Image (cartoon, rainbow, N blue to C red; front, side, top):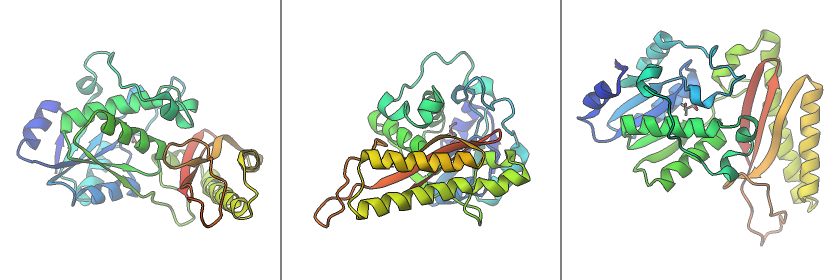
Length: 289
Ligand code: PAF
């Protein structure tokens, strides 16, 4: 496995390949990232993982400075997972001057949910991913399902800019109690770690309650909003501070409009998404149903 820090060296290394498969990451890798690398491996003729903590996607009061930088441990894990090339640029390599050109995703997709609570987040993500795509020129790219809205925004970016990249989504890996694996789980104290599974539990409960109301023909937008508010309140009573816990249509992340569960109605595929803070740690998760 080669560790490369500059775009010029990366281009020289990748010149002999036709179909690189890329897994973009911010490092501090866990099994979830490694599963994405294993998924990427058979897709291309060389597997590249990028490690870059992207200042542009962090808000002023977020954890950019404290985000764990664990390059040596990350490289050892990537090597074991069969990665061929690690691209780990310094900040001045990717942003040699202030990044004044940016990718502006559409507000109806990027200013809701995560984008509402983290203004500018998806502009930062799209801009860095556009730059990583230019550097690697991948034929395939793999992103995690845990960042549900992120992978949707990036798919739309690739589609609208006609980028010749096949986008793949990797399933969320979970600990045995159901907590979604995340680099930020490392911030949790022992007590918080035991509590953290309650976010997954809340998503499950909300999806079950929504399905039950739908089957009984009792669901409408007002009822759904009531169920969402109840779920958030229950989580907050346990000491969480919830940003959102909400049921959305999978295809555009807007509120559902189809409340008819009868046999001749076309079902609307749904996803429940949540973001909540436990102590100082903000966790996100989602479940399709
Ligand atoms: O999901 C992440 O780790 C980051 O948002 C990404 C896609 C690597 C861009 O910095």
